[in-house]
Structures are given as structure tokens and as C-alpha cells.
Length: 180
Image (tube, rainbow, N blue to C red):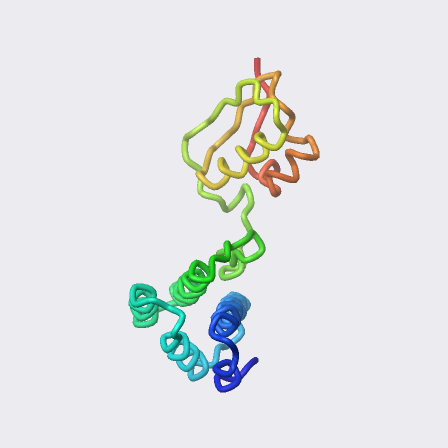
């Protein structure tokens, strides 16, 4: 881990980019039950707050997030995630799928048909031809707790390799069937 002294010698934009990466590392450590160094974290946040690159509104937001008192691991994870994403927005970097630290990392519960929250909602896909769209609908449906997906005979199959890739495993979680 880079020292704050060494971090302060980097160009300001590089220092903020490295700070965002450090925060991501802390999120991953937290999700993996690795203890964090509170002194280093406090010094890192102080360093970020002293950055000449950040405008007053960004500094205010960072200070507000930094002052939040967290009572559990999920709240602490959310705090560091908020700081990291604020820095990424400032740097005009978009987060990607691989940046996501999921709740399953924290709780150890993987999403499955058994432990997902389901609502009494069924949707019907009427002649959706694109397997990419079908996969995307499955992902959204899993997220929103759809009980079942009904597909018309003209809809692309959820077992199509492109639908499987886009659904990211949700075709195995959300029940579905083809109907007339």
C-alpha cells in the first residue's frame, strides 16, 4: 500500500486516481472480512480533502460522506463506495461491471432462486427477437423480483448463447416457460 507521503508527491490527478483505487481495495477487503487500518483510512480521506483538483461542491460532498457514522459493515462499504464513485465522477471515469462489490461479497449469500425476494409479478415477452434483449430482460426481472417470465413462441430462447451471456446467469434463477 502506498504511503500518504508518497501519494502526496504524485501529480494531483494521478493521486486522486490512486486514491480511488485504494478505496476500491478497502471495499474489497471489507467485503472479504479483512480488517482495515482506520488510521490510514482517516489520513487518506484527509489527503483527498486537501486536493487542489476538487471544487468546493465536491469537497463538501466528500466531507459529508466522510463524517457519516457507520454502524455495520454494509454502511461502511457504502461510505467508501460513495467516496470512490465521487472521485471517479470527478476524474470522468465511468464505473464498470468489474468495479461492483456486491452484497453477496458481504453476506456470503449468492443470488439464487431460493434466497431472492420474489413479488407476485409475471411478465410476458411477445416476439422479442434479440437474444441480447431477452438476456437483459432476465437480468432486470431478477433484480426486480419477477416471479416468472412467459415467452411467446416467437421470442428468442433464453438458452441461446447470447441470451445466456447477457443474462449473467439469471436465466437459471428466474423461472420461465414458452406459452401460446
